[in-house]
Length: 116
Figure 1: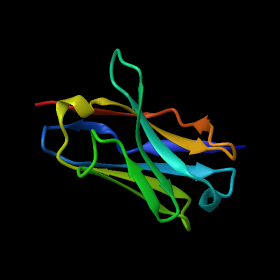
Figure 2: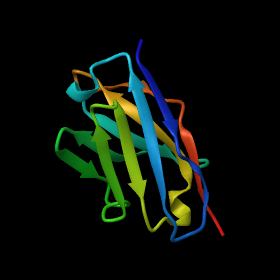
Figure 3: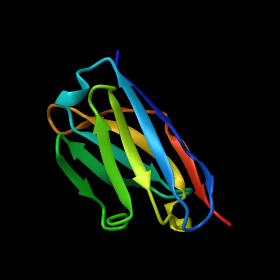
């Protein structure tokens, strides 16, 4: 079955950096678009970034600060987060996109807290 396991979250000071990882299993990782979606405390879901082969997209709120990448040999998705701001505080989810562009499988999330 499909499994997505995020790691790498934690507490970081403003201006700092973190790298999130998502270990995927149960499907042909290289064949699917993968996404990062976040949810700040008390707020709704916010799409962050998508990766499909060599194509990447970013939300305006993270463009220029975050970088999405993937290692298809290791079935792993990454999110490099630089110049972190308090408003980046959220649970970050790794999400698989299905064949019909639906977000069909979600990880349990990893918490990122940006605070001094």
